Length: 160
Image (cartoon, rainbow, N blue to C red; front, side, top):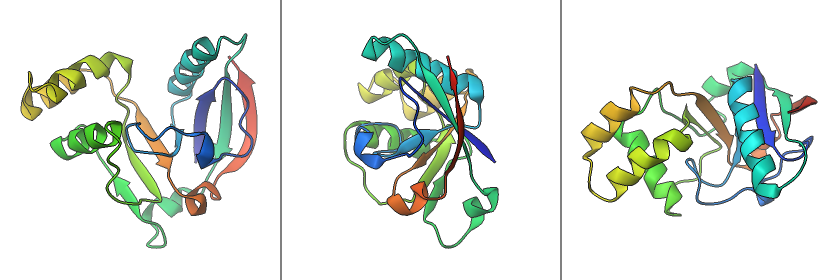
């Protein structure tokens, strides 16, 4: 399977020490199966770092790993209350369990406002999820351990 990572630089060798802790699925190397989503991430990071170009680094991984008992993988099939609570807890820095990989929907910029309303107690979990389901959600797969990152094989990078 092909996986894409958007950044302000080419990433040939993923590393956890460059990742932030307070992200959707905790500290990890984030990828998606959607090139356009990775390109959006690259553009956001390019603007944040005030550099001329963004890049989408392309990796390959054996898809069978996602069903292997050798890895602790947490999978979300959509925006559920469990997913919402997991994302909110991680954004607050409370990563509860060490997973090799976490797979599920991306809470992108347009969705942050809805999640913020949930965090503030303005929206219930049910109302928040109903609103999130009206958006087109892309997927993300985070690699949260060195063991998992070693599964990725760099192919190339495309300048955005």
